[in-house]
Length: 384
Image 1 (cartoon, rainbow, N blue to C red):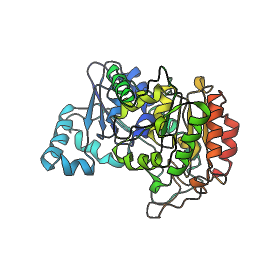
Image 2 (image 1 turned 90 degrees about the vertical axis):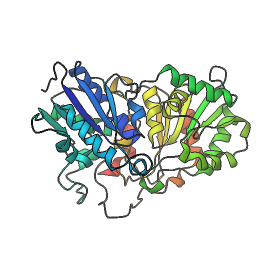
Image 3 (image 1 turned 120 degrees about the horizontal axis):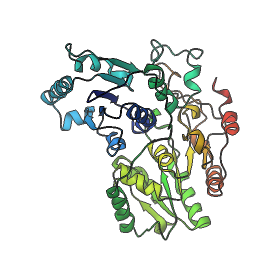
Image 4 (image 1 turned 180 degrees about the vertical axis):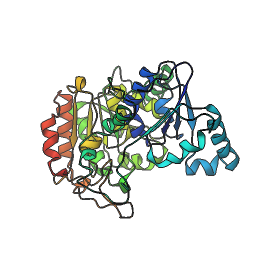
């Protein structure tokens, strides 16, 4: 087992989507518990850094530019300066949660200070080029959290003892959430709020339930349960949320918050909501992290890999997932289709999920009914 003593330094590469960053937090917490005195730096994109901004498990965040950031804010001089700065840190250990930049470890590791340890995801050779169902069965049957945990359990000999998702909110996040809700005439202390996220990137947009369905669902929830609907999303979701609002009847109960809050303020709104409903995307997993009951709408993504994740001691909390009648996952953590092939949606279109099915799941969750493991197994029986 690697144990960092004194002021040794650990670099954690987290150039991942927001949801996957959240999935790594149990493993990151285990690293901190095993190395309480180490300095831990996390390499992140500007988009996912908020997940770790208030985390006690890291001591510093290092921004790495996306292509958009490069065009707006970065240049070659600043980019090379990042490598120079990291090279000067003298890291003792590097944990690579993202396999696409393994070369970076060797650039930032000075020859005079050899690494004590380097660990990464133990992907099969050429996993991106030649998918093999037989070799990848294990990967299809485990949640992304368990896959990320495997990196440190096998690579470092650590045991992940607290496998819940870790997301720390600050007082200013709650204040920002309160301000935006108040500006829209809502108060979660006096009114029941259901948070809905109609967006979700990835898989060529195939993870998105139609806006007309979200609009009908919102109207029926308002009429049947006397609630306010908070439509969440970033700036990129403003047009999508506007489509939802335009198709609803009860505009007086719809709060279109797209682009009006940052990620952690949105998390604070979700935490204060009675229920979260959304596609398989980061807000859904944020809802799980902050303890809000969840209804997940799933199309092509593999439920074993990406279902709402709860540790064993909390599996009694309420959640439901809804899938197409002929659900057959085609998007996995690993495997599925070669990189050169256009994504083939074998799930039966997400549009075939009815409003009645999602409404029923929402009312079951509000009544405290839980989706059990047997029901999940039945849904995923054809994945092998």
